[in-house]
Image 1 (tube, rainbow, N blue to C red):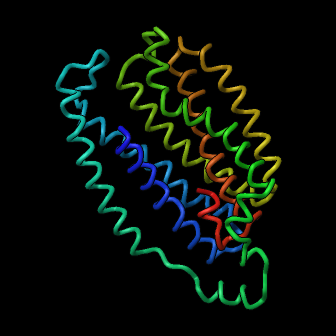
Image 2: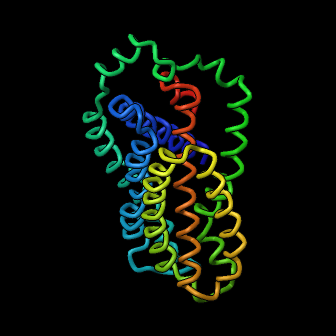
Length: 258
């Protein structure tokens, strides 16, 4: 489990930042839009691979308690998904290119945002700790629910939402809303800045988490609230990279954000 967690975390960190940094160099005044478009694909990819993974490990849509053959297929699913991810990552990395001409021009003009502050100065600043606490407060609960919604549905005791087929379908649809949230909030943060969109996201999260235990009797209501949670989750992971780059500059933004 430790190896799995470390490898996944490293892979996400490596794959998350380079496309955004390259995109910022092409559209320096549209960081939110760039982050939103890139991270839409990052989040919505779960829609496709949720279905692929389920078709490998549980093709018959069996519900808990799962028979032994479902557990036995889990390692095979991981290997097949890893192979797909490797091919797609290699191809994608070959397509990423920074706009060195614009960056050189910006540095020549001594634009502070294009230069950015040093990593050690950023992580010691009050702004860094404030942003860190803010993302911990709003992204943490959404990540937990996004990862544990199946367990929550099963433990609720509601037959309406306990089906593995329903839960997998909602995971795929939720991934789409995760991606749409990143696209939407990325455009919003470019227009309204960070504070107002963040405040709206935080209020929506509180309302959705309070509603979730009260809608387990209905597939439609549970699915709607769950999609709203994924929508807000996507918002967190686009507004914070954007405000990070605008606050500390783009030079060390990936390291600071990680």
